[in-house]
Length: 281
Image (cartoon, rainbow, N blue to C red):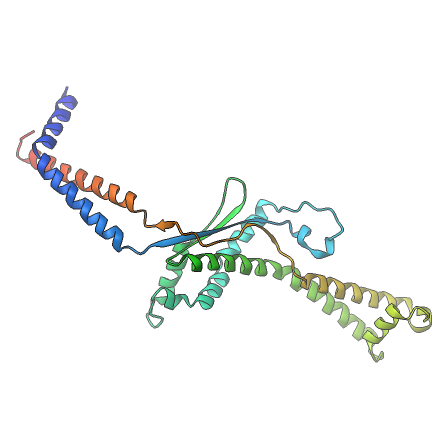
């Protein structure tokens, strides 16, 4: 019964102060409209990618049948790289984000403010289909799209590094062994050319089987390195980021409705507390 009476009392309080609450609602509506129109407009661009299986995108395995798509660990690695400081620094320098975000580079908090702004505009998630969505907000729709595509490209480049470095080290190691073992040979490349192009020349007359094996390994390492240097991607880009004319932020209707509701609820609570204090309820 008390709850019912309290409910009726609150309803009577609202009816009694209807004009005041109407004024509060209209005022909050006007203010929220003004604020929402003063807020900067942001546009969002998104790229959707899938992580490839590292064995599948290795050009050396071109003739082998491999599952093209990577595991959750491969997806996690892509997401971690995309959010890394290296990618952020690259985008910061390319687009001069200090100037773009109107941040004073001499201020002691400049780097912190830049990082907070950048991370606040960047969103990287794995969707329900296990695809990676990389999104970015900017006041310019074209810039948002370009930044996303550059993040994807830089992430791909960084993800290739271990494979490139391994192949380079393998080649350099083979070359070093050949030079150390057969330092008396004038030109390793000359021998390689002879072995490849002079069919009438007997290999056994020039080189021992051990040297032949070493040169073959060097040749294989060189070919692997050349293959790795070719253009390939560690990700399947399902959708490249494009400029979207639709405004992503601010959501004016949400701001206005929320502001009016908060203002009305606050006003009712103040009236209720005042009435309780005066024993009017």
